[in-house]
Image (cartoon, rainbow, N blue to C red; front, side, top):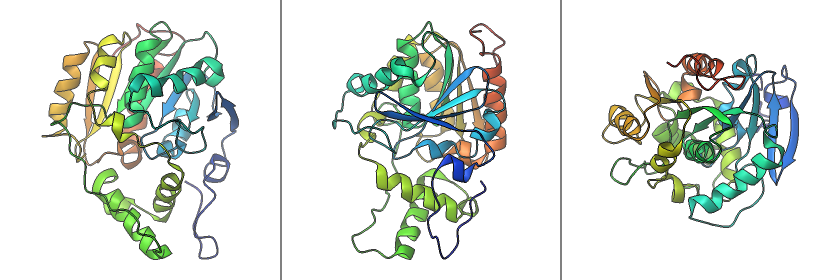
Length: 296
C-alpha cells in the first residue's frame, strides 16, 4: 500500500486510485452496487467480508490483476453501495447481488470466477449455486455461514459516543487484534484507518446471515471446483480450522482446503504472498471458461 498517514491528514483517502495509484481503475454502478475493476484476462469477482468494503482485498488486488480482470464491488448495505432492507433471509439479500450481476457487474453471458472472504464467502457460494453454468471456480477465504456450535464470535468493543481520535483508533486496533489480524505488528495506521472507514459506512449487519448454516446448502448445489483458504489462528472456527475443513469437505466433493500458518481471520491481508499464490494457481486453471482444468 502506497498511502502514508500524516498528522495533517489523519485519515487517508480510501480509494483505489489513492492507495494503489499504479493500477488503471474503472468504476461504475450496477443495480445500485458500486464496483471497481482493474487488470485484464478472465473475470474474477472479489466479494469482501461483513462490515467491510473493497478494501478487504487491498493486499491482493495488484497481484491478482496481473492475471485476471478483477471486479471488486462493495456489497449491498456496505461501503458505497445501495442501502438494503434489514432482511434476515439469505435469498432476499442475494437478490440484490443477483440483480447487480445480471445488470453488468460481470460481463453478460460470460463465465467468471468468484472469491469471497468471510460473509463474502457466504454470498460467493450462494451466487455460484445459482449460476452453475457460468461460475467456473469458487474460492472461500475464512468463510462464514456455519451451523451454531461450530464458531465463536470474539467480544468486540463498540466505540462510545464522544470518543477521541486516539481512543477510537485504539478500540478499532484492539478489535482487529481480537478477530481479524493475529499478529499486532501487522496492524499499521492505514489498517486502522481502513477499519474505521468501513465501520463508518456499514448499514447492514451481515452476522444475521453469516452466523447461520447458510454456507453448506449453497456448497451442496455448487458444481464448480472449490478452494478454501483458512488461517490457522482464526478465532472463529470451533474447535479449530481442521474441523472447519472437515465440515466443508462433507458438503462438496470438489474441494481443496489449505490451512495457512501464522494467519488469523483476515488471512488474505495477513499472509498475502501465500494467498495470492494459491488463488492465482487455482483460478488460472479455471479461467477462460475451463471448469475442468487442473485441480489442486
